[in-house]
Each structure stands twice: as C-alpha cells, then as structure tokens.
Length: 281
Figure (tube, rainbow, N blue to C red):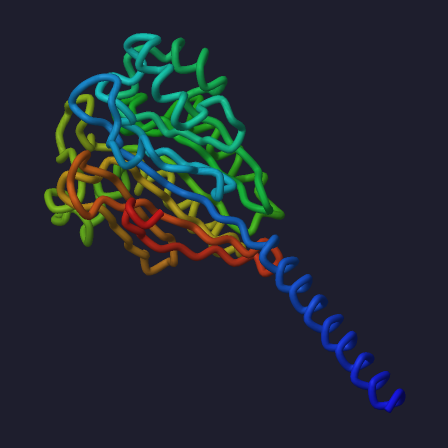
C-alpha cells in the first residue's frame, strides 16, 4: 500500500511539474508578442473634447501608441487642450508617437513643449524602425531637410525587420492610378491646394522608389495614414511591389469607429494587424 501511495504521489508531482513548465513556457512565448495600437482623427468639433470612447480607453496593454493626427479640434491652440490630450495619450512618453494633422498644427512650439518631440523623427523598437513624418509641412511634399532625414534613415537601415512610416495625409493616393479614384470614398480630404487637402506631392515619384529598394533588400515597409474616419474607418492596400498602405480613423460619436491593432512576434520578426471596433479594444 505504501508503494502504491508513493507511486501515486510521485505521479501527481510529475504532472504538476509538467503543467507548471508548460505554463511557464507559454507565458514566455506570450512575453515575446507585443501589441501596438494606431488611433487617428479622435477630435470632436469642440475643444478640448475627444471621442468619448477614446477618452475612457485604457492603453496599458499596448507597448506603443501610434497617433495619426487631428487629435482635437485645435489641439495646440491653448495649453488647456494640450493638457487634456496629454492626460489621455501621455504625449511625452517614448512609446507615444504622433504624426501631426492639420487640426494639430496651430502652435508647433507648444506641441514640442508637451510632446518633447519634433514634427518628424525616428524610433527604433523591438527590431523595427518607425518614422514619423510631417505631411502638413510643404503641403504634402516630403522635401528639404525632412526628405534628407527620411532618405538618411532608409539608406542606413540594415538590421530592422520592418520600416513603419506614420503620417497624417494619405499622400500615397496622389499619382497612383489604382487609388486616385478612391479618394472621395476613403480620405477625409480630397485633392486640392488647401492646407488640409491631399496636395500634388512627390511621394510616388521620389519616396516610393526608395521604399521599393528597401523592400527588395528584405525589409517590410508599411505606411500608415490617419486622415480617415468621415468616409471610411479603415483602409488597406498592398502594391504590386509589396508595400502596404494602411489607414484608420474615427468620426467622433459614430458607431463602428475602429482602431488598428498590431501584433508583433519579435522572435519570429512577424507583424500582423487587424481593424478592431473601439468598443472591443
């Protein structure tokens, strides 16, 4: 009887150790998967309020927060609005990245004071490179010092698995035949010469060829715009060269608003995404 009891007890402990080991391994795998969230066009028509669902969200489960611009009606016009936006998004955090929209652009010095970042910059995280562009500067064109900056990043990119480009305007829709006729059903702004418009620009003539070269070298390239929400809540397009154009945005107070959630396996160097209703985030 003692031998039987001993064998049963030994079997119990062995099973417990296997179970514990399995859970530990599973937890270890989970820790290698990071989640990022892209939100954009959170503004209402009244400062300093944002979409009510966004104002109540908990962002702690996301390693990075990517903001696509137009956070408030006039985000940087006064300190009070910036303080409110900061209380929600923690603008100065190294993991909060913000591509400025036309509704954000009133006072760049105030933005820099709160966010501690320039209008365009780069971040390296979890084996990826993220570039934040300023598409309000030079009316949708990436030129001058910003162009030099972007090309400098691209030309020296060697070890990153992905290049993520965050921007507000859907500048890649201009000059691309398969996308131009979709502007009115996707973008908040149409083609034109105004400050908020998708202006004639150099993305497809100068920037895109550099991205294709990078893709051909083995780096995945994903461009994420933020000026959607009124006509469409989500957008996804992959070019024949394998470059991804994505966009997500909100129309405050409407049903069906979405965020763009990324799941990143940093061991496998795999990045996937899905558009998720705000109420399910």
